[in-house]
Image 1: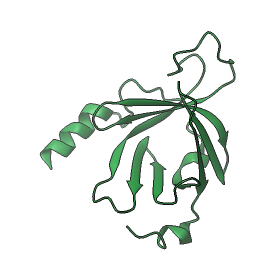
Image 2 (image 1 turned 90 degrees about the vertical axis):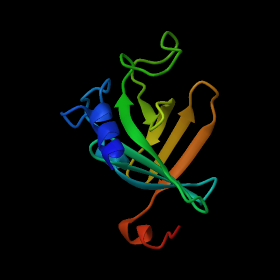
Image 3 (image 1 turned 90 degrees about the horizontal axis):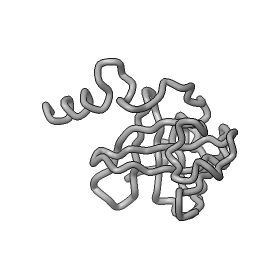
Image 4 (image 1 turned 135 degrees about the horizontal axis):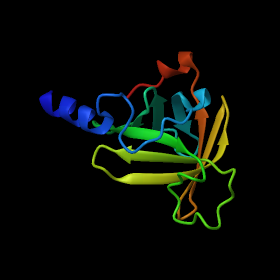
Length: 138
């Protein structure tokens, strides 16, 4: 338990916002549980303040970390010089310190479409409604 608290304080400092992450507005649409359209066993959950969790049916453990929505100036993309200035990015940092960068293709209250940078893999999710959350059992 002490280790978990120490990790939390390290990541978030005492402000509740992850160190190295901007305080930029996080769209409310991303908050909630999302189920992969390609693999129904994969669920991602985004919650405030900037918390991320990934669950996969059949695994005993889930992975967690922190996330942020970045703009062109604060991009996590390695290709800033060719990126458009109105693009948004989703950055996820897992508990082991690995950072994942996604181009935010679509985000609304029903659909989340990401493009993994730099390979270009497309990840599509649909939002689970609150009554669907309890129907998914792991």
